[in-house]
Image 1 (cartoon, rainbow, N blue to C red):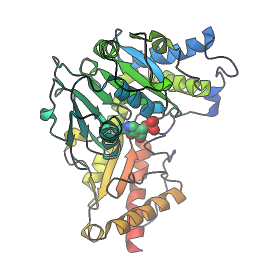
Image 2 (tube, helix red, strand yellow):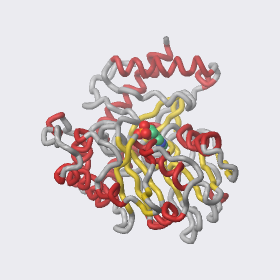
Image 3 (cartoon, rainbow, N blue to C red):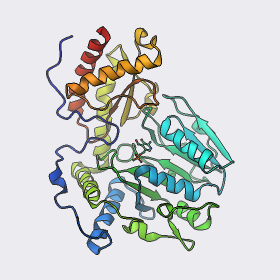
Image 4 (tube, protein in one colour):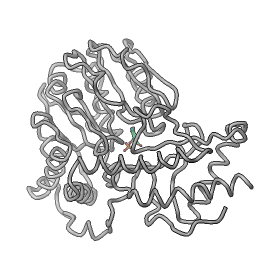
Length: 383
Ligand SMILES: Cc1ncc(COP(=O)(O)O)c(C=O)c1O
């Protein structure tokens, strides 16, 4: 096969940290609020702006709290698991490694006993109809390492008694999130809007706040997990008074991403861009015999972390180590050509490709990428 000539204009297809928005340069940070206290009125105003812009773009109801918390999405999820679980039984959903990590936390670290684990293999979803509305439920909206997402929130009952706790880090700003079905949602800046890592976003419904104020977990909570003061939610966290010191450089970058989102038409256009990106790869997969989606069912297929399997018999006949080595060779070749960076599947996932399709990616770059994928496959296969 002849080596293609046209390269993607930006070879950044990693699933986190994700590509910056089109046109981004460090100049976007020139107005950052640096060398000043984040607790000054101007500093707090910047943090509050992140909160309110996030609320506006995502359509989060006005009676939901939105806060900036330490330690990225992981920090946001952990502080909630530690603060609210144990009040009732919990259903833990997992179908890839991040969901599995939350199961480990709940079973091995929190050592909760009334836990049901509803799990599925890479490429599939557990049976969502098994979720019990009398119990809490913890799940990822989009499983970043398998490219499998929940299709919608219909399986979460409006009259649930438990809390629905959603790790939405690779879904927020790319997929429709039904806020009436979510009591807790989290994400990190480094995902769909291409911000910098460091801080997490935490959304709490009024029911989640009621749980925090009525349930004192029987365990010590480190300072960076504590959201309740004298039995009341610490509202300051949700107005921009962060628990500890944030990076105002990262804050500026998060604002840049949000301003860009607003400038292109908000959530509707972000979702449309991600759908178009998935469509480009779907068209290519359909006409390409050596590759298939890891998620067989289109209804649960991610439009952000798009996971693909190599399916020709010679490849499938190899032991796992050799399949991993082969994929590494293929992706290494693309990296060397500056065509695609970081598109190897996640270490725990079946060996294959994972290509980011969130809104900061241009569909034209994915179109330019596909002939290169065919070329790299053909080159490495021959070798
Ligand atoms: C579903 C999911 N949860 C949690 C995380 C961890 O996010 P962070 O490293 O921002 O804490 C990731 C990162 O890729 C993720 O994809």
